[in-house]
Structure formats: structure tokens, C-alpha cells
Image (cartoon, rainbow, N blue to C red):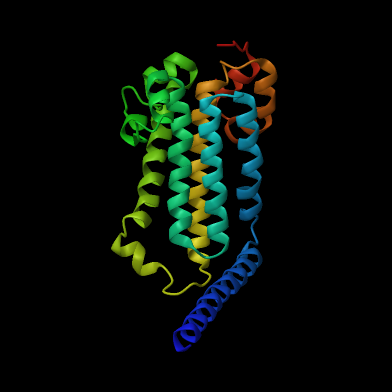
Length: 250
């Protein structure tokens, strides 16, 4: 009888613990919403729809599935941020960047795409960032949009930086760890930091997608993403030319 009572007490305590944690997350979410005076959440959330349109534009394919997987990680990251789970939020943001760029890189490397889809190949960040053959290389740009040659190095540098910064949360960097809240609580500093890094990851991925696809999709598909691309990258002549020029079907 005593063991049954002890087990029941344990179950009650366990349920109480997680209900309290859930309530705390709810309170942090409320604080996050109240803190967002500059529209960071609106910008971060509206990006979900922007990348959903990219998935539709690319069409049913393994590449689109990868981008969909990336977007799911982004949504998880955003929810973790709003609930004060900052380490998880930065880790998921890095995974969003990795999988999003994987969808671009493997679209040009069909054998590796099939191996990755079969679980026989892991994400290869070094390959994505290779200055000679990676996404942000002159080789890749010449293959898909040579007018963007002058910009690939800048976006590679941004990708490397934000990847490294997010990785610090995954690898337990001492300086980063000291700044994290000791308990589950709201941190305006980390809320702003995550959004700054999210801005960077999104623009890197958008550039990579635009580089790879704008000149290689049907016109009607490009029109689905045109407004998003024009707003974020319309300052680049190679982007404006791709949006206004002829579009081929691979």
C-alpha cells in the first residue's frame, strides 16, 4: 500500500513540476510579446509565409522537402525563443540555416541529394561554404546567375559569422553560458540577439535561394516570391535583372 501511495505522490509531483514549467513558459511568452515594441516578432513570423511561398515555387521535389524541414526548425526556434528557452532557440536557428542551405547545395549535386535523403550523408557545412565550389562561390554563381558574382563572398562571410555565433550556444561557450539566465525567465538581451541572428540567417538563405532559382524557375513560380525578393534584395542589380529578365525552366 505504501509503495502505491509513494508512486501516486511521485506522479502528482511530476505533473505539478511540468505544469509549473508550462505556466512559467506562458508568462515568458507574455513578456516577450509585451517587449516587442519594434516589430521584431512580426518580421520573424511573417518570414514563415515568405519561405512557404518559396517551397511552393520550387514545387514538389526533394529540395522543397528539405526547405520545408528547415522552415519547421525555424518555427520551433521562434516558439522556443518566445518561451524563454534560449539555448534551444539558437540551436534550432542554426539548424534552419543548415537545412535551408542544404536544399540549395544539394539541388546542384543530385547524387549527394539522394544520399542525404536516404540518410547516408550528413549535412556538410564545410562543403556549403567552400570558397571554390560551395554555394557562395564564383563557380556556383556562374552556373546559376553570374551577375551575382560580386556579392557571394559577402554572403558567405555573413553565413559563416551567424553560424559560428549560433554554434556557441550548442557547444557551451563559457562567455555565452555566463550570460544566459540561470532559471527559466525572460531575457530581453537574448530576445534581441536571437532576432538579430534570425535576420542574418533569413537574408543569407534568401540570397542563396535567389541565386539558385530565380533564373531557373518558370515565370509564374518566380512571381510567387518576387515581392519578398524585391523587398529584401532589390538593391542588387543581379536580382533585379533576374526578376525582370527571361526565366528558363530546367
